[in-house]
Length: 332
Image (tube, rainbow, N blue to C red; front, top):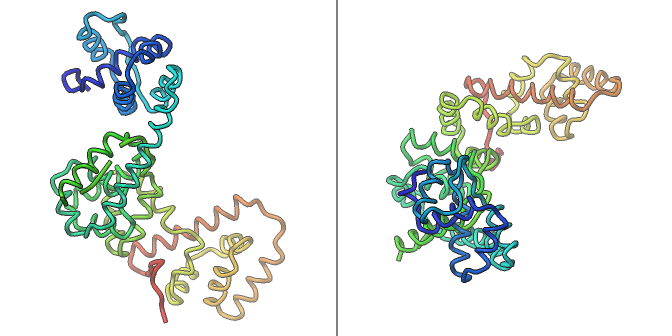
């Protein structure tokens, strides 16, 4: 971050951070509430500032007290702590509540958007903004919108969504204002946890099976570790009930007997019934007897076997040998 790119509020936040919390709190205590709010908002979104930039900013304030030799870090917690030290308790609380309010407003604005219109609006936006908007969409809207984006942007958004954490209120406010102007309405202001792997899994679950798998394959090429995290959460042992009888029989033909016995030691009744139904009567009886005769077993060993079977199912799905019906599908 270079000094010329900083706003006046951000520069003021940098100077306060270089002074240390005690001295900064005394200065903040002399400011007007509006000034305090602006600088605190800027501080909460500041992020890492290296020593060179901090020094340049200090020079702009006519040789302030410090000439930093180390970088400084501005974040939401620091901003709230300084506000409280200065006696601005209400402003400190507002710093946390503004983001929630703006986040809710953004979600409300996006709820009325059609996927085609939203995708068209996002075509020329930077990936950071697209990610933030997608994070505020309902799963169905998010998945349909992402499908309409250019392929390269899709994968970029998936990665960013999984890593999206706190977002400052001012960024949210800017998006809200832009959306409102666009529809005569849209996006954002404070610090809010929006993304993460769970959000990404939720989005992919809303996609069709083929589209979701294509996106995951693209993600694997760019970020194998993230793709593996997503796959583990997309399909679990409990999801075996989403595999039809023919697919289940194909899977069970490959599962080692020892792994299946162990997995059934603490399996859900619905999953257990689905497995036994797809075995021959004799094989099912033998398996039930074996499971009943098993001694106490470590839970982590049982879970490992269940994960192994879930991964085997995922591999068969990826190869096209079996299909998994989506969670909102019903077969009759």
